[in-house]
Image 1 (spheres, one colour):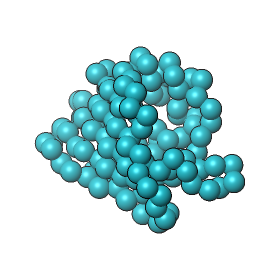
Image 2: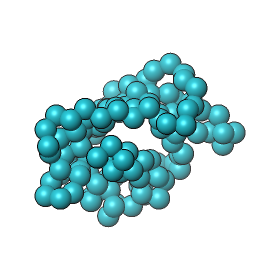
Image 3: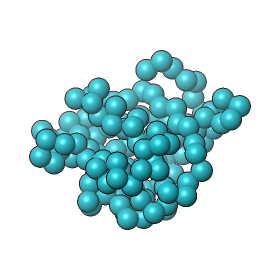
Image 4: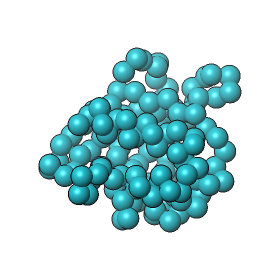
Length: 124
């Protein structure tokens, strides 16, 4: 389960996926809510609208942990940072995502990013 959810989470970091309303619509739960690292709250429609015009940004992520709430709800926690054009990391965050299984498909129900201090990249 960890591998599948990490793969889906990392898919959401992919700039081509972030620009695809069709794929985002498949990955995000209809009741999706995000609290961004700025503190701004987004719903699914707001995310679909805002990501279309988002500048291309590469994301580094590591240290994934899963916390199983039920057989249909899992909390995924990890660290992330933006990768600059100089390959340096910035905008370090602690991320949490609630993934809900709808039918046979995992959908992102809730996401939050909290600013954190810098960390060294690891292979995890």
